[in-house]
Image (tube, rainbow, N blue to C red; front, side, top):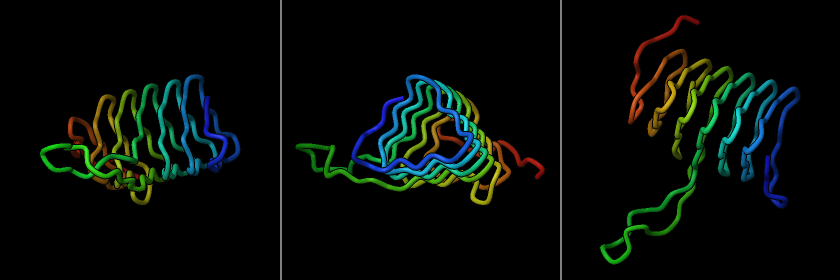
Length: 138
């Protein structure tokens, strides 16, 4: 795991982070979290307790405003990302800024999905962009 030395990264107890993962703080990672290999997590991310994150996941809080025709990647912007307690994120998922996953708890994001909108609790989402597939019982 690599991390920036000057920005705070808070990690709860019994959390496991596998090799190749890159964390760029500030961020908070709860207790009993599992982050599989080669995850890439940018700043201003909060991960709740009991979250499972598959391999090759990218959680990207920063982007750009749309610029004019001479330079479309305009001024930079960063939007918080919140992953609530008990969420399961499958392999190779991409999560973009401004998203909350499992508001309350317990959502599932299927492998390979791209999450651009917030995900309600106790739902399964999948696809590009991710859409609700079904509800899950508590």
